[in-house]
Length: 177
Image (cartoon, rainbow, N blue to C red; front, side, top):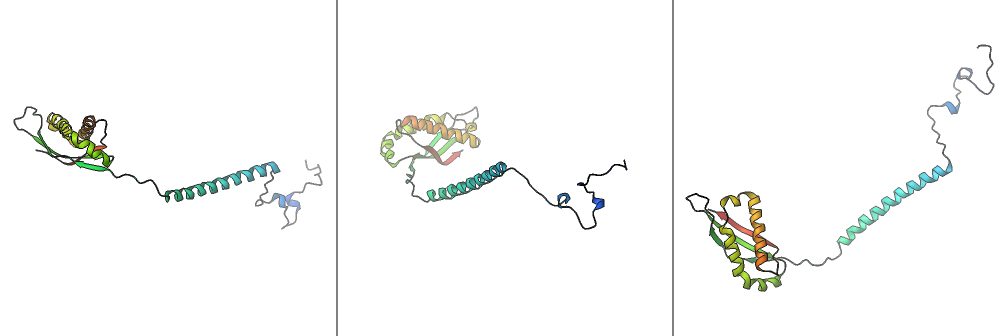
């Protein structure tokens, strides 16, 4: 194959003098040749990313201005103290009688409900007494027992003062002795 001649337009690296290299074969030169349509698509995508980030920042910072606007005043809750309740717990076969002493506060959503609920307090106290007397000491074990007690008392109070509603029954003190 030594007899074949090389085309004139192809040069080999060996034929070039030292120090002279063609720019097309350089390892470090990067040329990106894309058609104009692809450049427009890349430019539009970049614009959308920048516009979306700028718009998001604008609305995020604008939202903090809305927090500074005056908001409607939230009505504070009203609390009504009930008399202390002292009941003996249901006896589960033991000789020792155990007592439950509870200090309860009713949370009302509005001050105007206090005069409407005050005449119904004997009904509320009766509902408490009858329910609490049936409890066993094991019913009050742990936070789950107290949560069930609170929910049941809230349900009973709301039934006693209907159509008015009590937001919550709160415990100031609970003693099992």
